[in-house]
Amino acid sequence: MADLGAPVRVSPLIKFGRWSFLAVGIAYGAYHQQRLATREVGIREIEAKQKAIRDVKLAEEKKRQQAEEIKAIADLSGPKK
Image (cartoon, rainbow, N blue to C red; front, side, top):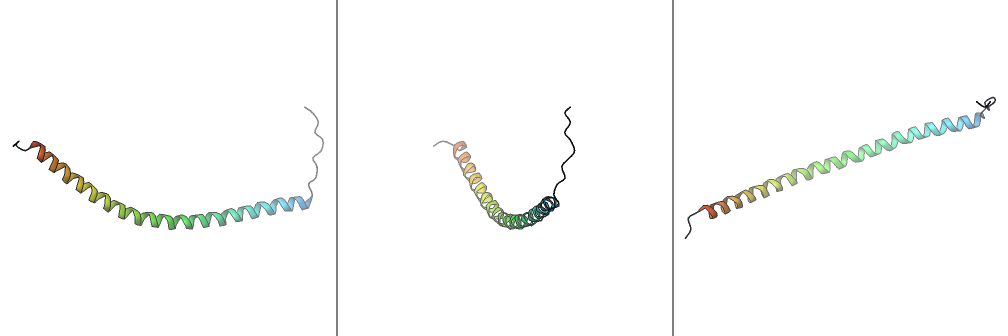
C-alpha cells in the first residue's frame, strides 16, 4: 500500500460551516415533513368525504343493475307467446 502521509487539518471555519449546514438541513427537513403531513391530513379528509358519496352512488347503481338483471331473467324464462 502507498503511504498517504499525515491527515490534513481541516479549518475550523470549514468544520463550522459543515455542521451548520447539517443542522440547517435537518431543521428544514423536519419543517418540510410537518408541512407535507398537514397537507396530507387535509387531502385524506376530502377523500373520505368523496368516498362516502361514491359508495352511495355505487350502491344505487348496483341495485339498479340487479333489478335490470332480474327483469331480463324473468323475460327470458317466462312463457313464450
